[in-house]
Amino acid sequence: MLDANTKWNFALAPSAESADIILFIESAEHKFRDYVDVLRSNEWIAKYPNRCFVHDFADFPAGFMPGVYTSMPRDKHDPSRTRAGSFMGINPFACTLGTNEPQLLFSFRGFASHPVRVELFKLKFDRPDCVVTQSFKWFNHDDSEKQRYGDELRNTKFVLCPRGSGTGTGRVFESMASGRVPIIMSDDYQPPMAPMWNDFAIILSESKVGQVAQIAEQYEHRWREMGQHGRQMYETWFSPEVNIFRLLQAIEEIMLYRPANHDEREYQATWSGLKIAWENGWTLPQRGTRKIKQLLTPKKD
Image 1 (cartoon, rainbow, N blue to C red):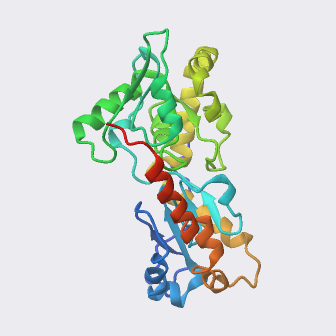
Image 2 (image 1 turned 180 degrees about the horizontal axis):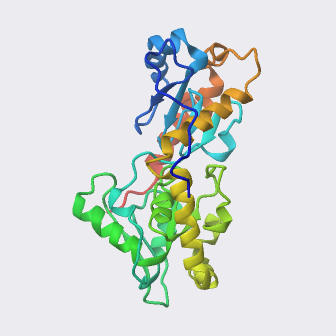
Image 3 (image 1 turned 90 degrees about the vertical axis):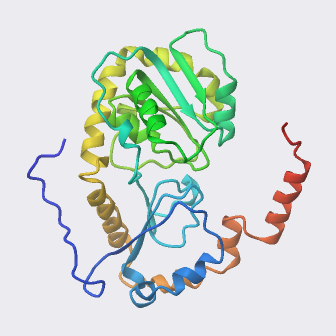
């Protein structure tokens, strides 16, 4: 836990001209190739390319800008350009420290937005305190539904955190905030580097989703210790009071990692190139292949 007198070496600049870091908070909307035109038309990106960074929490980040990403796949992370980070806006109903003895071994409530979740919903558990609930909503939950989710989170020892559309999920940080143990199932997820994740979280391969009950049982005697440690790490690294400063620290690391002659305009010149288009699945052959797969996939009633 941070001391109340912790000092941060950051201050809000009076103008973009005098700032060392110009931070863009990206929307979660999916970015396509034409987003390049939006970026190139921004006067600060044009004037001060080496000072511009992004905090991007999209499920499918294109990676145009250097900065901090919540769901950048592991193999796309570049230490000279990116860092992994946490979400800014997680469910406030799910961030209260649980104080009662949990009645559930583990739980999950979510949308079937990835094959690992689909497999999870197929499982049958021998124990009644293992609860997996499929939701048919995505982002349009009302406050009562968010409250129910938060109450369930605090009533469970372990929180299943399978990836969804993106590699990262805010559920990991909500679990930590609640003093519960996240079981992370996302093979391509790159977590923020600072905490010792194995001290308070269980990293489970997507291929072992069928073993989740046995894994949770093996760790059940440690849930309280791990949950308390996770809450401490949340307060130190990811809580609203420190999140922006940790974000700026990560950006500062990128700046220090760069060579003295770094020129971001050289990377910007590749924004419309084939490499980035291929990495993001925007080329004509890739789009055609997806369309064919959609046409050949049987429709569900």
